Image 1 (tube, rainbow, N blue to C red):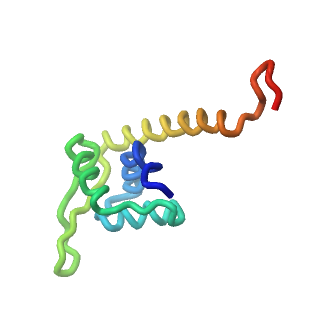
Image 2 (cartoon, helix red, strand yellow):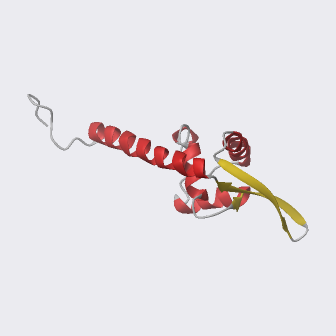
Image 3 (cartoon, helix red, strand yellow):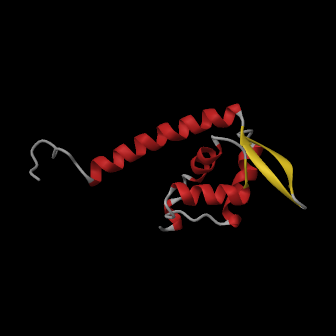
Length: 114
């Protein structure tokens, strides 16, 4: 899938995969890929700046976690992040309905035939 398809929806994708609980960066990438059945592949150069921006906006919190001898930053939703995710879902539903009504019209507008 084209990377342009994700543009404008990255925040919602990141917030959605963090809804069940905290994850580190590579696990976030894997969760998006798994949920999209492999159609969406995010790069670290894309998600880390977005995660940092979402944290600055107060939508995410992060903490360092030790995993063996490695340290990883784990991100989790804040209450503001949950509210933003609800807004993202609503905006997506409206957008998908509008695009769907153009691409797959159920009933032609008055005066037009299919």
